[in-house]
Image 1 (tube, rainbow, N blue to C red):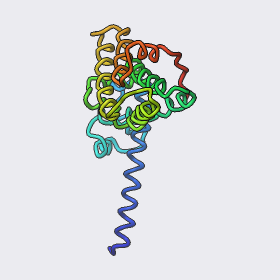
Image 2: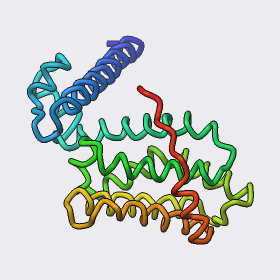
Image 3: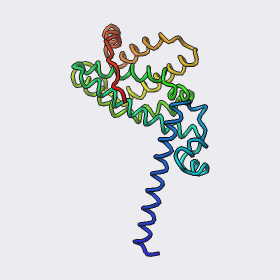
Image 4: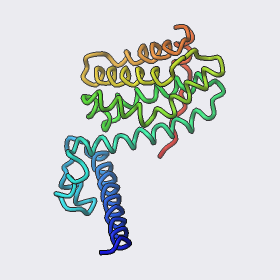
Length: 213
């Protein structure tokens, strides 16, 4: 086979692999959203994706890995939804506050998040990576506007991600009451350099509903 033919073959293989991976994530998202991660099976996901049952493991080592891939997409979509709402805000500090509260509320209520919270390190890192470009930008904007005093936005967001996952896990396992979420949001806002009273004001402002997907 000449080099040009080899390149064409490699291109076809890469495209097929990309399609298969996309199909598996779409199928997993549909099934897991309907019946939960625990009840979903790799066989039904493979059948819906129209790939061989054994082929799934060429792309994902386990159902959990596939679920994390689904959750990463949900995180990015949530960031976009938050952005649509907060684009209407005048106060850049409120933008970040709304985002933090929305993420922690989602983590404690959305079944697809709840079932993976025990993988706290993985999920916190996924939040940091997928939602970080938005949150770090919001921290920078609020700092430039004089509303926050954040020297290292990436570090601040990193710590927030771990706190969000830790508290969400404690709430969903009933180790802590749900009202600890309010205190968590205030504490995370205090990490931006604002006083407690101002943090509480930001945390308690009206929160418009997210746009429907």
